[in-house]
Length: 402
Image (tube, rainbow, N blue to C red; front, side, top):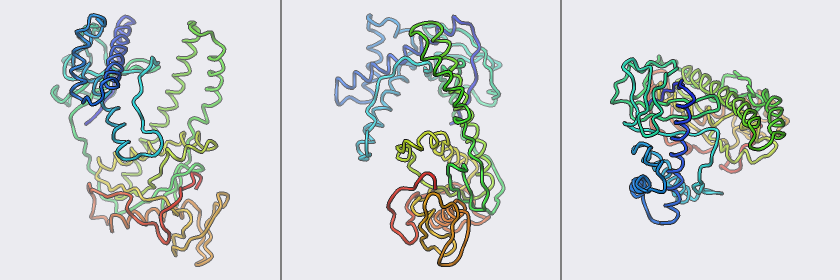
């Protein structure tokens, strides 16, 4: 499934119509969630039937204006939150299980249409929304050419409201597969805060620290927002400026993760990395902001995605003792966080701490999938995370500074 995005250009009246559609979709989702709370034991199809009841209710006449499939999509969103809560309970997930919550009025939001309620022009440069809100025709601004795909491949269209405007996301039923020449190389990655990552060959990528660089301007806008009067137009203006600044930081972080992950995957036939529990690591209030700014989880997701696209093996290994064990002899060498150089008293091996960890990660990755040479390249179903750490049992947590 491919997702292409284009910005919508229209008039203020049309944007107001989209806002009404987004608010209606949020109302349908919250109503379905309330219906599930009041009637235990109902399923997914019961929520779809409840959408028709909402549309026929004269107390909420605006619900009938929303396209029927858009109402069903909102019900599916509510059910996905419910199903995720049930899965967390069955898996005995520690901590909070993610009980579904009601969506509130925010600067961002979305409404999702399926196969009706919208229509593309013949030149694929304009889109028209023809449901009860009558938003009309919008011009599409984007770099993707939609002529390569047939209309029957467009499964859904999602209208997203962000701080800088409205966007249309097209979900296209198409598998993305790209060819590449095998490189015969394997690589292990050790992520950190001093450097974004250090690979098993000793190469290091600097941590961009997008949030830290924009922190001064963000604090200034936040102070201005706190001084404005609630409900005033000036508060709305400052809030929009603050939202745009946060949006820019998030886009910078995503752009860095996408480009770096693509380069990493194209440069090797196997990529090994640590299976870090970032959710537990951000509980450290001294390092939470720096860990979130690094976006290790987002980088890992894009590495796994490009691994499937280019046919490269990607494997996550347990992070236990990767920084403590010697990559030359395998013996454990205890280090403090201030010790940035690995010196093994057993074999005399001296190496940078992160470089030593990256070599251990690569070794664990090769143990998991076996030997991978230049002639082996493709999608392999892996049972991740079952490798046993060398010399010591798997216990404890990896410190984020290692």
